[in-house]
Image (tube, rainbow, N blue to C red; front, side, top):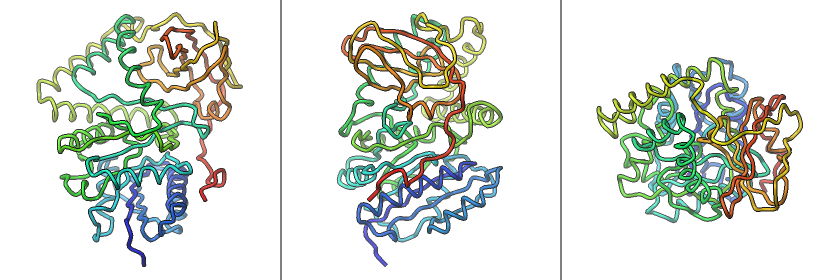
Length: 403
């Protein structure tokens, strides 16, 4: 049996069996395309006490040589990852690799090699992540996450209350997002996306745990990033590696009981994070800010940052005409302040959403603005509804050439 550099890939499954299967298969195909031995790929899936029956998908994974660990309770994302790592082979070496993966990922051809080569040859880097898109055409860039701080949290709250503050915060956020969305080479960052991370095993073994189990959901990745930076490691976003991240498919559709439970866990994790890094006073300040947002009159909450044109309801991909020819950025969000938005670039005097991108949009109301990339000028702002459901089945590996 071969024993070259091993990759231990960890996936936590919760009601997302078909996506987990596609993620695991895409990683396996990419590993073999690199000429690596399948025996050196240790795929571990932790089923986090999924309430729906996952037996068929988990059995298919086991047939492919994936190690499936079935937890009797929902340990949270961090707890699931820690359980997965604890279940890995005991003969790990410092130059082996560990991947932290969301189940609704898909590794596009050529993506894995870039990540493996980079983290293997840069000992000063603690973690590297890829550029993530929602669609196989790699059009819509997913949002860049900013490092949560007391200042940033306060800015975010004020931005939801005041369009003027929102515009100022938006300029700051967009200034950070543009290099992230344009990156084709490695870009050092203070915060990565926790959906897809590659680390060396030697670095992981320095940590008290892979992810802090005090976080039931959310903030566990931020905690990991701060831990790595505190130990003197860099964090790198590598635009040369492209993956698909089918946002929110790992927890089901937007809204409903799943989202309510996720919100409860988010609140617990947020309290734990600010208490850990900013002490009791910091946690108290965040609670005060959150309470102010909750008490803010609903009619004044999340007021549109720009005047919006109502476009109505759409089945087919959205199309808008622009006032002039330009290089532009389309920002798409689910609130009229674009505090969390995805971005897609274009040129010309009009924009039509690519069909392969449109297919992944949820059935929901959206807010869209288009900015001139060179001048920053607002070219238009609109709101519309997608009136048909988005795609809810994972990518088929047969759709790609992983050879």
